Length: 315
Image (cartoon, rainbow, N blue to C red; front, side, top):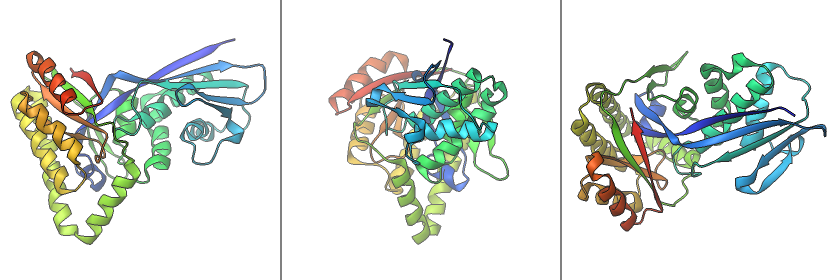
């Protein structure tokens, strides 16, 4: 029996989280060391079997709930392809990306499933980066309500991107990084539900629009400056911009004492800059470090309460 395997990376938002929902620029990058993997196998027994061993779940597609993101990824491809009948398939998904931590676990899962299914069924046009990004966005809407479109883009294209949400089509430009950027990602161990935090920011924006528009403008300017710094290899300046962006996120009330403790620990240990990454109120923070300070900062983050620390290098 034939099988098809596809993977998709995690992601980090370097600049512009939350503000990107309000049409300001953001920068995000793949975390290739953390990945979701989907494996498609033919079966003799009719039906489509969904297996998620990480969650200790196995069930039939026909029995899945309407809000099941695994099932929605499968159905999104089927609807776009116009499939009316399924072959007998077993779809298994696994992931090394921590869930609900701002690292794009849901988007990566959906992208891996969609790409693997597209290749397995001979729908190579739907395995292309743009198609995978579009289909993953459909699943992201189920998970997050009003997603910016940045997570699905990064995990599908697997490149650092400069992103602006706009109609009729998002502005997406891949970035060239002049000098390697060494990053540490520290997990607070606190689950953060993106949909809830995004909804709370929207409520605050609606009640104090002028103030929040000003904060979003500041985030947008930081992202624009960061793009220039990355393309010119200005690592020190990039670190200062990250710390600046953290202050804007604190103004939005999306930070937390746990995140701020990790940010402070990283900076005290010699990080060039540090900030939360993703929705906030838990999840992960990121620190930009020089390679020779990496271990010192990693140990400081663990001492400050990080549940785990992951490394990533942007090139």
